Image 1: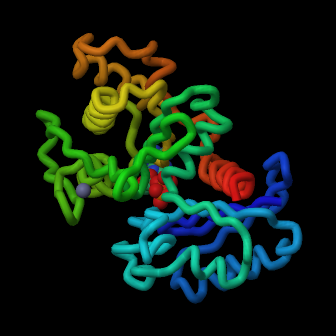
Image 2: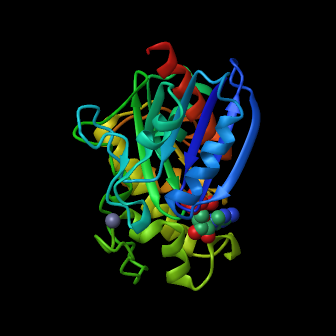
Length: 289
Ligand code: ADP
Ligand code: ZN
């Protein structure tokens, strides 16, 4: 069996699956303190201890993914103070002597789509989540694109929309992509949550303009085979077409991309991308251990 931990800022989702990565049990609990939350995680996996061959973790971050670092496996400078400098992989290793795959939550979702969803069979896949925050992960031939650390693509700079007077709410950069286009930015700008805003509201043109800039920057930097936009905000199904159109306006034909309906897309696995990605990573890490 394989285990997965999707460690999000608001909730943890843990699952176990069989050899074919079919999910056998899945549980979810709120992210409180490491003491409380990890106790529930450990208790869940203890039941399957003798059958487990590997565990994949996709965590909120920033996290340390540098295998040579003394703090590999730690959550590092997160705004959630009780989780700062928490040795996540170490805490798991204390209880389970198993191979453990460790990456960001959004990389795990990217891997899920790469292995089983819209990225299947492609060599270069980029995945963004537009939710409480904005994060991005990129895969090249089955490996995450990273150097000294994992990417932080959600904080790329964007040009303000002409009709948008909102100045952004990222505590670090103000009007970066996350500061302008994540769910809380929509709520702060309009006084309403995205799920309560009508489809024909001008807000969605503004939102699409920012997401299109993200697709534009991604295209120019990586020329991937596909760019997938998931997360709560993309549950507005009319949005993806608006993003494709705004992207076309920005690109002005400079780069000939694949057909936009296959190139700028929503996830196939919806909310399962993270769990399936963690499970696939658990299997990978076990095979190579
Ligand atoms: P998280 O990022 O916390 O894992 P989500 O991806 O669900 O969770 O993102 C939550 C954000 O997405 C909230 O700001 C919420 O208002 C927004 N959101 C959720 N559902 C929708 C929807 N149907 N339309 C627009 N915005 C939504
Ligand atoms: Zn930012």
